[in-house]
Each structure stands twice: as structure tokens, then as C-alpha cells.
Image 1 (cartoon, rainbow, N blue to C red):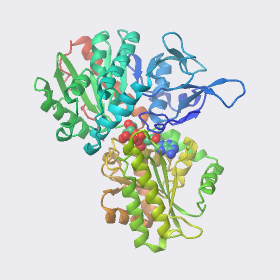
Image 2: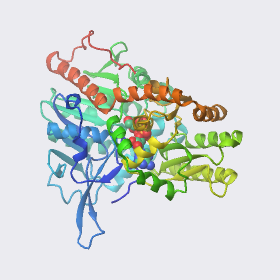
Image 3: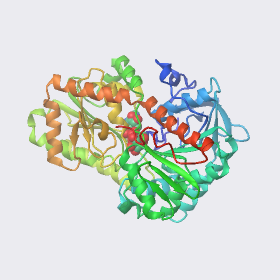
Image 4: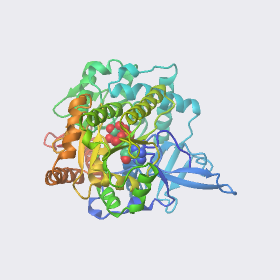
Length: 537
Ligand code: ADQ
């Protein structure tokens, strides 16, 4: 199986294990909660839900199918299966086009062929410029406020436009009167307008933007600001995780597009004859699945992770799980751990922090430098405190099966989630869902979308305040069991209430409203009595 550097991003949902049946995804305990799409669903995402690969390990060349286990794909795949939908994505597997038909379509899952996966054959130049270029050297740093890391390379934007056009053309091939096109993320800021103009007016176009939206002051640095906004206003519905990002977006539109009419109360924008509704619906995780996996995990999975990494089975365990991304605040976390061990010698030898950090976007120099810095810092801190049979920080970048990850989450007494900025953060929610003994503690950065819902019962941290952060680690470790259970039970209620199904159902409710509006009211304003425009967080 080929390993890509982006395998663990949940928006890219490339956290793959080899399966060939898509079976696990349809298992549900309560079918009444299944999210229902109001029309026939067309999903557009950068990464695909199934990838075909040549298996060179065999003497005879065979093809295997691997599939991501990440939250978004795991949630959307069953909906596509139920609605006989279409999924359009970049075909990045080496056997992808050999198993597809002339239109680059293949039926998936392999066992049932319930829906169509349409693959786009992108050249290496296209991927380098659209994906590693404009998406990840411009939009990603910009939206996270790292404007010093913006890198404008010649041709990146043109390729971004060209790839967006290719996706839009593919959507037009599959769209019908009742289609609901649901676009995922920042790789497709330009496509919505082209799609809107090329599919039946009764079809709906929606997009979910998984990362933050910056303030107008930051957005000013966007090289193609007006084009990006105009593209996004081709959507009938545009979703963000939290209200703050939706408000930032409306403010950017107001400042950059004087001819747009922004109604802040109704969260709508009218521009160029189209209306876009902008909503905040925080994404959740498949909480039941994490809980189930954590409860049923074979103990040998955990002991093998511990023994491979030289961790004592007796240790009090701290855990961090992140892509190696400069937004995730890993150096700040290490600095706080160093301060903690400095000030609390009693914990040396009995508390171990395991950092699962997965290399990501390694073709981009800023990511290479970040990865090296993190690894150097771990070594330095270990040199400072390690004893013969104990290391304060265990760093590993090997891939973990979802079941093993859930078991590790359940075992960890302290989970540290310390991004400098993060659209939502699913790891924090996965930890809570997996804490089936309800006695773990979550340290959560106040700069994550997840903090808006979990902040009241987590141990809040400011990732840049080293002393305060170190104190919170000590507090979390010293909190009595009954208090830990009280906090974790409240967190679990929140995570289970607003899980991935809730998120999708809410998105589809909005699509339904916007869709009905297109069909029956000729794009008139939404009913002022309709439910709130932002979801209570
Ligand atoms: P990401 O920035 O990738 O997602 P996050 O939300 O934390 O961040 O999701 C990461 C996913 O990768 C989690 O599902 C996690 O379990 C998995 N993962 C990470 N390291 C792993 C490892 N070593 N082994 C196995 N699995 C691992 C983007 C945005 C976020 C937003 C999501 C969803 O940046 O803000 O929450 O999309 O919208």
C-alpha cells in the first residue's frame, strides 16, 4: 500500500486501512438517526473514498482496494451508498484508471457497487501546483493566520483554477434536476461558481470549509481574494465549523465586494443574482464507533505499542495525536512538558508523554523544517531528563489502526490538544468518545473550534503560555477521580449529542431549506421564521 504524506488529515480522510467491502461503514445501531440527503448526492473532495493499488508483493500482479477510515469519508460513504450517489475525486492510486471505465468511473464499494466514483486524472504538475501549491502554500497558511508562510509560486493559481474547472466539468456530467452537490474544503474555492452556472438551476450547490476563515485584515493578503470570494458565492450554502469563521467570511465579503448585499441577521449574501446562506455547523466524530473500538480493543494491541516504544505498562500516560503541521502547537506542548518536568520532579519516571505525530505535506519546506524541529526538541528534552529505563517523551510517527488509536485514547490519563489555531479538531472529540471509563482528562487549546463546545469541561490552555500550560498538566494529573469523571461525563454527553450523523443531518437540513427556496420561491430571502442560522454550540 502506498503511503502518502497526507494520509491522516481528516479533511483528506486518507487514514487508510485495506478493506475491500466497505462493510464496516454501514453498521449502525440506530437507523432512525441516519442523515438523509434531500436529493441525489454528488460529493466533491480532493481525496477519494476508495483507491485501487497494484499489489507488488505478490508474484502475480493483483489489485487491492484500500479505503480511508477517517470521519468524513466514513460518514459520507454510507449516505452515497443509500442514495446511489456519485463521488468525484482525484484518482491517486496506481491502478485507479486501469480498473475504471472510459469516463474514469468505477462502482464502489467493490462488494456492492452501490454508487459511482468518478476519478480525475491529474498530472504531476497539476497536483504540485493546485495541491502542494495554492491550496497548501497559500490558502492553508492564510486561513490559519500564518501569513509569513505564504508562498506564491508562478502558475500555482492558474493550476488551481484549471483543476477547479476540471472538477466542475465532471460535476456537470453527472448533475440532474434534483442533485445536491456537496463540495468539501479549501481545495475548491473557485469550482462552486462554475458548477452553479453549468448545472440545472433546481440542483443545489453546497460546500463545507473545514478550516478557519480569517479576519478581513488577514484575508487582505490573499493573492486572489476577489476571485476566491466570487467562487465561494456560487454556493447556495456555505458551511463553517463555528460562528466566528462565518462572521469573518461575511465581513470579508462586505469589504472586498461592494456590490454584494450582506444580511448579517439572516447570514445571507446576494451577489451577481445568486443568494448564498452561510451557516456554522460544528463537525462531530463517529462517537459510537470510537467508544465501541475502545471497549473491545484487544489488549495485545496496546501492549505491542508500549513494548515497541519502550513504554512501561505501569506508566501514567499523556498523549498527543497530530499531523506534523505548524498549526498544531507541538513545540509549544513540548516546551510546557519540559517546564512541567522541571517543576515537578516527582513525576519523572512515572509519567510518560507519547506523541503520535504523522508526517504531512513533506514536499513543502515549511513542513520539513517543522518536523525536524519537533524531533530535535524531543531528543533534547529526553537528553535532559531521561533515566536508564524511562524517557519523558516518546515520539513515534508510525501509522495506527483506528482500533489501536481508540485503545490508546482510552488508556491515556491526559490528552493534550494544543493547536495555535485549528478549524475544529477531531482528535479532542475522538479522545472523549474513546474514554469509556470516563476518567481521562482533556487539555484543550482555546484556539480550536472544538473549544467552543468542550471548553467548559476541559482543562483550557493557552498554548503560548508555557507556565500556565505546565500548571494545567499538573492540575490535570492531580485532579481527584470523582472530579475527572464529572468533567468527562459532561464532555461525553456533548460529543455523543453532536456526532458525525448530527453534523451531516444538520447540513442536509440546511441544503433542503436552500433547495426548497430555489425551487419554490425563485431565490427569495429565506423565511425569517426559519430556525437559527448558526447551530447552538
Ligand atoms: P486535520 O487538520 O487533519 O483536519 P483533525 O481534525 O485533528 O485535524 O483530524 C485529524 C485526523 O487524523 C483524526 O481523525 C485523527 O484520528 C487522525 N490521526 C492523526 N494522527 C494519527 C495517527 N498517528 N494515527 C492514526 N490516526 C491519526 C482538518 C482541520 C480540522 C478539522 C478537520 C475536520 O484542520 O480543524 O477538525 O479537518 O473538519
